[in-house]
Image 1 (cartoon, one colour):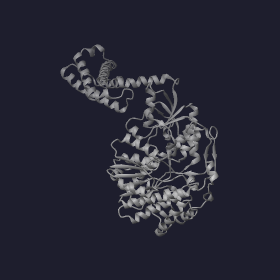
Image 2 (tube, one colour; image 1 turned 30 degrees about the horizontal axis):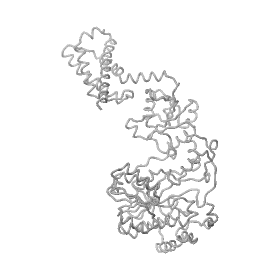
Image 3 (cartoon, one colour; image 1 turned 90 degrees about the vertical axis):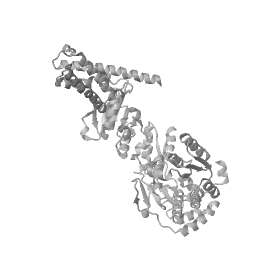
Image 4 (tube, helix red, strand yellow; image 1 turned 120 degrees about the vertical axis):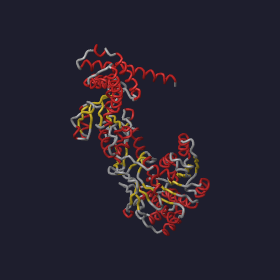
Length: 623
């Protein structure tokens, strides 16, 4: 620690000596430039000594030795100007009173100019600029900068002035037509986003830096998609906060990823709302080891719950998230319990032991094709798992019950979607019956990187050399990242009053084939050339597009523009309860009549031929 302070002291001393010597030279040159001689100025040694002493104190007072050397800009210029004037004005007054210094106004003006250009900070800038101009392209990486604003300018200056940065900015892309033909730090603005591919070839660009932190998600998505087509390495500046803090540097750049290509605007939530209903509460997350459940646990842990309980049947996943949370939040009261939501006795035991205030129900089977061939398992886990947890929430006086639903519950044509729609009906049923618990469901589409998402599958297929398989060239889906979806789930929970189905704004739908093409490009390959894409046909129960809201539900807004409330569709509660009784027994026996019972509750569901297929003993032995 002492050696560090000593190095810092030596650095400040060296800088102060350089500054004072530069100051002295600046005034000599200023005096000479106005027709005076050096000898005339040196006739007043006490005046010069006073100026130097006043300058030293002023520079320390204004904190010049805490300012950066290589990246001095307008802010540093103001500090330096204030320091020079603070030293100059007292010096002139004292000099005039003592007769030691009488300086014409023209020398004052020239003196200030020479000081600003000669002092060490800007000499570093000047020398760096000279070195950049005459260094040439050899040994450097040719760069295109997209964005001619403050962030782009900061990055270009860093590339031009730093010996450590081996990049050479050759052109700038900006959509503002008035900027075309101008320069940013001496680098020409050559056109808008439509010129990216042509300019990459013209300037033989090797890397592209996207520095538009204030742009809308849709614009970033379009620009990144164009950049991905060039086959060059693309890096992106994360956000506006780096620019506001003066940190739009090369070190803050990150590689482009599939999230950038989705073109989504950043999602914001009101943390105060979330804190208000989670802080100090006992929270239970079912399916807490899964992709959605584990992210729920991460974000809940950050909002100071009194206790967090993870309930999951798969011990490996539960253990992984437990170790992560214990490492990151050592003070967190954390409990991990193993069991299935199908087991109503085990569910009751967990509620008895934990006494949760809030329940997030994320446990479910979600794979559409797998549930088509195992409908009884979908009913056991999704329908009756939800029923067991919802009933326990009412019995133990839980304050709030939030179920994770899916866009596939809207006009469902497959088993998975139909069972999740029945789950929503169960939530709505308990919302009308419970006196203590607010029951809500939150519905959203696909999440990138979740278990069963196409992204991990595509990455494995690309790593294996292809082909990448897509079911249909026209199939589209809504996408959101896991942290985005979970943060909105938490926010929706804050709005819950009971019975709502919250619908998350998933943005614009994305064609799966476009997603596959872009992922291949991001991996450094050319679609259909290096890595082929094959279309395999829609799977049982799969739709070309998913909906988020039934027409009958209507739409209500919330304080968060990304969250809407669908008006619940009326259904006959007596029919629901009677059918559930029949379904419970049919699911145990894997009775084919189960499918007709599902259709009774969800008329849009279609019974597919594959459901009648049974695996014979010989076929089972082969597997």
